[in-house]
Length: 243
Image (cartoon, rainbow, N blue to C red; front, side, top):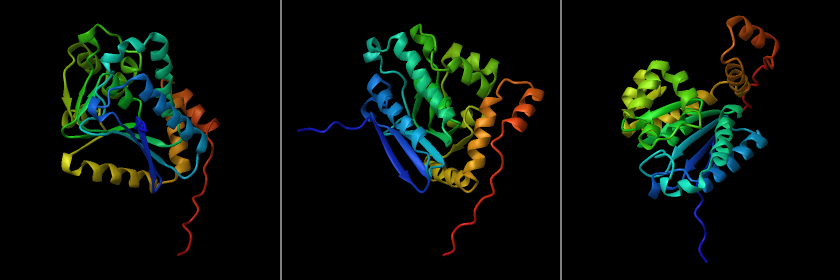
């Protein structure tokens, strides 16, 4: 009897949870079963807390995510798209810092998936594009909201209206990616970034993340009041146990 291959793999090690989209033969194109598997992992992360301080989202094989699986577009009605938009919102609600580690294709729905992370790390050979316009589609997973917040309104409209592809180096230059690494150094660079995050207080990281997202769009005065009166407060870090 055959065993179904998991559509999203999870591996926890040294404070890092790695979630890997696992449809390499389809360049990790999104379909409803893959999103159901991703949602299950996010629900588990939200419920468990624990020692994890970083979530890394990546793709198996040659690409991060090539977007929607258009061969299954019939299963992707408006209700499903709205439901999965809420799944992507979960990334910002997790206490962990979420890093999208992008190599290869990161196209349309894949780009929306990456944009939902707290930040994006790119390999030089990564290819980012929004191709909604080529298919007469309109985004429903946050492209029109998250992309302008990353790169600015004019640049976002340019990328959306032309479907132009952007490599990892340009993605870093325009602010789409926080960092770009040479392909040969990509995995090591992602690991080093995770270590840099974990070297700081997880309480502070989680609180800072929540404050940043909760005050997005507020005036400075409103944001300052929120920071002062809605802060969870500082927590002194405990020294590591003696060897």
